[in-house]
Amino acid sequence: MIKLFRNVFILLLIPFAVSAQTVKIETILGDIVVQLRPDWAPVTVENFMNYVNDGDYNNSYVHRSVPNFVIQGGGFNFIDGVGGQVPTDSAIINESSVEHKNLRGTISMARTSSYNSATSQWFINVVDNPALNGDGVGYAVFGEVISGMDVVDAINDLQYGPIYLPTSNGNLYSLDVPYLNTKPSVMLESEAVMVSSVSRIDVFKINSGLSGLWHYHETSGSGIMLEVFPQIKKAFMAWFTYDTQLPGENVVSNVGDAGHRWLTGIGDLDLENNSITFELTSTSGGLFDNPQDTQNSEFGTYGTLTITFNNCGDAQVSYNLIEQELSNTFPIEKVVSDNIPLCEGLYNQISE
Image 1 (cartoon, rainbow, N blue to C red):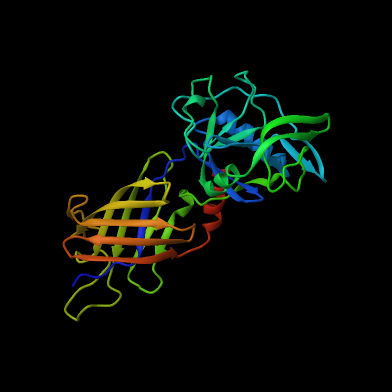
Image 2 (cartoon, one colour; image 1 turned 60 degrees about the vertical axis):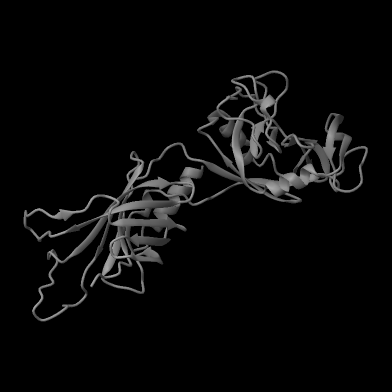
């Protein structure tokens, strides 16, 4: 009788490529979560995060909204009720690229007609804007909205018009300024689409801290172990089960006995969904401290197993064993939690 496998011993191989960072733009109409892409525009992301880390975007507002085009912020603020401008650092090089286009939901740096003039101002594309693309002459895309496009659309649907923006050097006349209710001649904090804060948020990502033994606490006699290798974009797995008591007085059931059951697998990493799907092969016939060959099936012929990680200590397993016509889904958790802080530290570090 085939024993149901409920726990996992897994070896993971996971790349430490340039990793995405995630920020939350908190507006008066709701939150916009943006995944930054340093692999697309490293200088631009570093520049944007400097403003985020310095708190320069806090209490700023969306000062431009053109229907079916863009919403724009990062330039003006209200501090203690007084209108002003976001303090700027030196302008950066233009990292625009035809490879990374200004599509709906992407975030880009605003600039003047001078190509290398971007400082603090950013915009989010409400529609695809091919006219903004170009190698070194377009507008540099450095991330994409992963949550909150309904908020972007809500801002873009607001009334707008020419309004003076208050600064320490007087009022600056600006077109296409969105407002909440009644159009002021000079922007008021009560009418502005305020951005209370822009901050980095920690989003779980698969990393080497997942290494260790995993199990399903309602069963015994099986296990999963995880080990992560940074340079290889593959995951390897060994999934085993064993008898917790002798099946019969005439049956030998020792560690390493030929009846000991193993499934191993290799799979690609789905980093966006924090999951790995393994093609399984069975291994049997091995004896403890014995050089005799084992019997192995071809990868994928035995079935598949997918592990989806919720965080550093919990995951979900789904498997399908073809010949046995067995399938199931169940939760697993870390057996030893000592390295959970390591895992959490790694994905926080990736986000920095």
